[in-house]
Image 1 (spheres, rainbow, N blue to C red):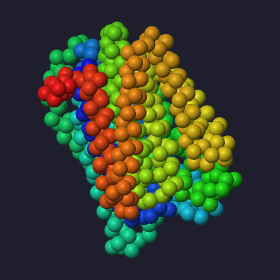
Image 2: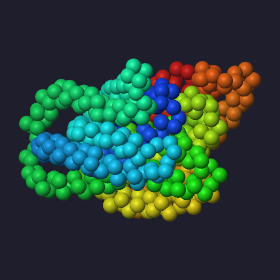
Image 3: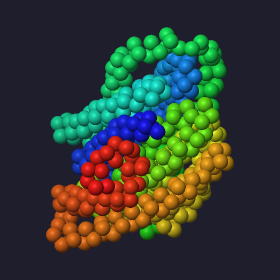
Image 4: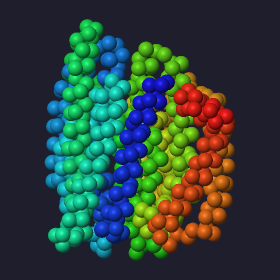
Length: 535
């Protein structure tokens, strides 16, 4: 279990820092381009993310599973042969995806925005899609290398390269937007074009980090290769067939969230046309798909780390038929995920006014959308983890079916729910789609592994009770803070979050240590330290 926790901790730390940077840059960028133009940014990234997932074809996770499988059998030669061939394949698919997205940016723009839109033109959307498409030349190549390292259960290259990629991207984005607006006298639309190009520049930084780790680890991997058991002599055709079996479901997993957002892009403005908020539909869509979505995805970083570290480990146990180890891993995964994700969601929901003010501005509508959208983060976290489990136990086909069912529900319900409840309707349709998909994933896991755990249910009940107590403490702290600190400046909102967050965190931490659940889930090292304080 230590390998799961260690691998997850490394990935989660890298993802946490990357996600924090990926949210913090929005503060100055939002200030530069304004509320209306920030929405142009998301029009580029949703089709980009869809094409990126197709170009990568689930390569990192599928590749890590393939490498982990043959490494567990002592055959290091097969994984190395696939690496050489796979890098070439990723370069080809990345280039093809770039050409497609660049050439079809115009039709995509016409699909995603109404030609009568008063905020952005079709030409604006077309140009930002074309600028972001250059990243497709580099990112697939980089992602495959990450998958290779993960197959050796070496998570550091992924975490560090993601962090450096994000730093380089944000520095280029902010510097470029500032120069366009304040030195060259350009328009906010041009600043957004330079901002989306930062995905390409950041990817180059990530590639350099991976080459450094490859040079460092290559002698060790060559030694393992030299001492490898006789190769299973898997042909490249059979390799790619096996990879395809792994990868196709991962493609759907990778595009799950962008697909749900894309449904909103296609239907939101038309559905809002019959509501009282029709005049602000573009702004509301930007709030939903960009501003609040950025914050909602922060708690989800834990699930991303788990899903990346989980597949090779479950694959290893499943390959050697150690079903008890698989079940223990599932128990540990669900408990840690909920123990850490749920309080983050509860705390952020209660502090949604302050969070939206800090990152954007004081907005009753923005805060309302954020508070209603944040609980969906729990579903965003559970879906990739449950899908990764299906991937690890060779039930990949169910990922596709279950996601399609959830997506069709979202598509069917989105327009009527938006017409009735506006932005809340889009959120409700997302909740329904994800709940059904996750429920179907869990049903397959239960049937395939005969998995059931009363202990997880008991601890889930305990975790919920702890969060209720924490929420009461946060409400009380907010009432006290309201007397002394208002929200007239961003600095005041920061102080409110620091004070109330510290109180809520202290209460939850105390309850976790006092009940012993924190020590049981986070390991003996924590117990060694907590005993000194009487826990």
